[in-house]
Length: 155
Image (cartoon, rainbow, N blue to C red):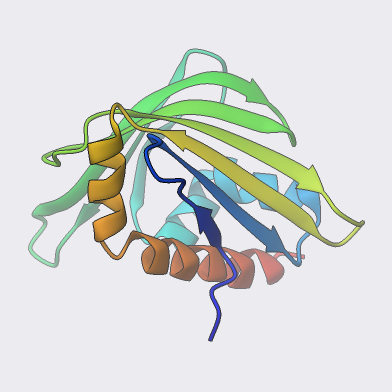
């Protein structure tokens, strides 16, 4: 089955462009990225902090059954325009990738469909390529499918 989340990675570039169309109105798609309780549902992680404003910060954390942290990520929100765009940094703890810069753009397609485009810039081509060696594309597609399912129930 073809993945609905498309990832374009040009050789020799330190960036990715990720695109996904959703059967959701723009407002609901955007809400899925800014409402902590919704983010937790589709990402499967705990939202420690999510300050949706310019110079705001965010932090997500996942723990195992014993309470051990197995995933932690954080960053700073540099630009926040409701229903249009979020520019932020993304950095995983205990990972070799370092900080990346993410430009998320939200676009209405019809009254009931919308599109997310994520432009992610890594520090180097090698780091970007290292990320692509992980099951990154499959995981992101699964997360976006959960987003669609979770948010559809809110509609």
